[in-house]
Length: 318
Image 1 (tube, rainbow, N blue to C red):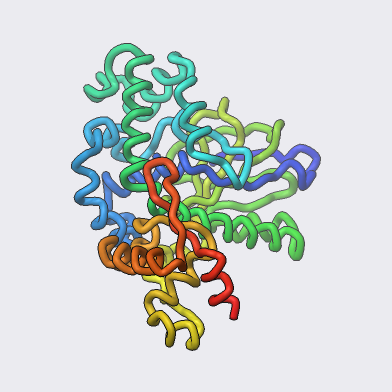
Image 2: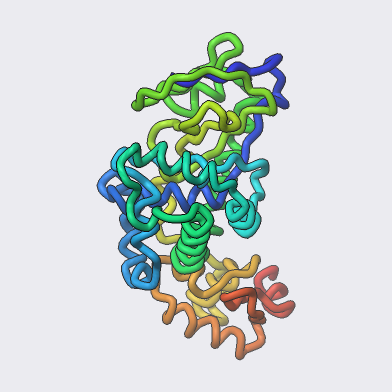
């Protein structure tokens, strides 16, 4: 059991945050044991082609048979608005001694898996490169959808605290978490057992890749609880294309629905993931809408983002 002692029971001692890097690394659990993550099977099947271009050998050894991941790959985030570029840059600066000790913590005293052997600097660079490719190929198109669910959970927990207090919020995080007096107790399946005060705050991080609450392996790590986000069962369900009837009568139901979705910029890959259709099908409609002056496009990094034009804003508004 892990015990975090809240210092002074101050609300400022508890914060919520979202970590793209945590989600990226924890998702590797589903690679190793997809049967434990049935709600993600639709997403996993969609990755078959993309995974061929990844460093799967390195990615596969970032978890062990117990689905543990090294602490340095699950840093404590400090905001619900954390960016993956910032987290990867910070990861690349990890001390070599920490890399070695954290990898040993999950793989034991036996020789490390081959991709993790050698200089800690080279191993870390290999890990960062593998995770960057994984993000770009498999995660980035779907991240807006994932992030929206995680941020929705944070909003819900904030309302719980305001309406019912800290104890009720902790009790609702997981059956294995409870607040007793000023101590947050987390019952784990593993034999981890330590206690420490939450000096510097306790961070609560919703995730899509756990069924029970979890904590860092080492008591030296900043206090953090990862817990299952609400609404996961709906994450990969195709979203309906809803649009005003009058607009659908002008441009067709599908294109009207895309215009409604494109209130905020999105790529064709992201839209295809949201709607449960092929990217090719979405691109045909996007090109037609752009040629008709209803969309504008601009390259952003590796993706082309589409957004409504001023004319489309007027049409949708009316």
